[in-house]
Length: 515
Image (cartoon, rainbow, N blue to C red):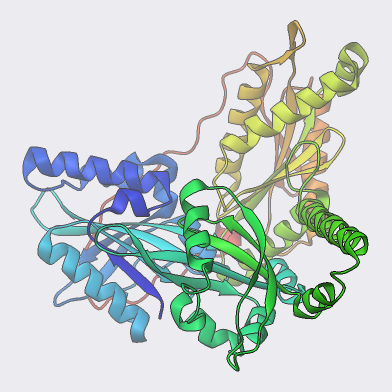
């Protein structure tokens, strides 16, 4: 099992900004009280950070019970562990969790860990900050901020394995003085395994110096470290001898990736030997070299365009129709399997044709971009989805969210859009949007759910625009805000009360029909 453990230099090693913020708050509390009270880390007071938070209360012995299990973590793992015990995690992963918790509590120190995802199939590396805290009665509470550092999906895996080049991603391993001493391989494709004569499973569990024993002597290692330090990608041709001592030439492109690099290797040995043999014909050699550069540039442009067209709307950067539809299908499948709610709302910019007529398409494009920026800013990262269906029509998918909460999100976005001016040329453009909200009823098809959201949106437009309309099921439509009315407020959230529950059975999830 790949893992890294740090009790110092956490700020320099972590990626998530929230880790630095929570760590600074924890240290300030320790300086003031001699320990960190739990209250400032209560999920109720942390806002969106609570979606990536785990709160554990110790039981007798070395076991803990999950008192809070963030919705973003549950979405990635595919299950909500609230009320369950840490002993339910078996094997090496469970031992790792328990050992780190015991060390953080025993030594009273914060600890940062990195480990490969074992239960969340879409998460490659988890980044976790463990903070020991005390409740008001003096009991221990362990707070863990858990963030997925790198994600890989089926599309990425397919692209990697379909590439004709070897691809290796590695993170630097640093000594106590911060100097780079090795590299931990975090991803590789099968072509890279064939180039070095190793199964890909061996590469993923090995280090750069093990997989590439001549890395330092060849000069490649120094180039990799320089890319990390300068953050500047490089491309070059270099020779790297095979295990049998024969000469092999590679075209290598290296780009920075966190505290490491992503390197691609194209075996050009045959071509390089042919070029050397044809060195007398300098003009032909120059033409071949220019053709090679053009082919590399063309391939890079095609790969970049493929990646962009696969999931993103080219104008606004929102998910495109296919990506948002696929995301909604996955959300419904998970909701059906695990019994949690999922809601969506359709969005249409009001009188958008008038904006285009008055300000031209450039003004309309500016409004579309601004609308996407405003509406995606308030959504949960890596949980909620926001996409453009076409024109001025958009849709948001909110997993783990009931109808009332979804309506509150839509109303917040409606008010934000109505109050926002879009700078354009020497003036500004004012716009508004109408919203149609619906929640999956646990039985209906995707098309039926979208149809209900569209019907609610139509009612919102017919009610004067700049309105949120909610489909309450069975044909009931409720306009939750008309112009001039007071916006709705989210339902009250009960106060968080961590409780110790020994030998308790896992709680059954409510069916969608119950909420």
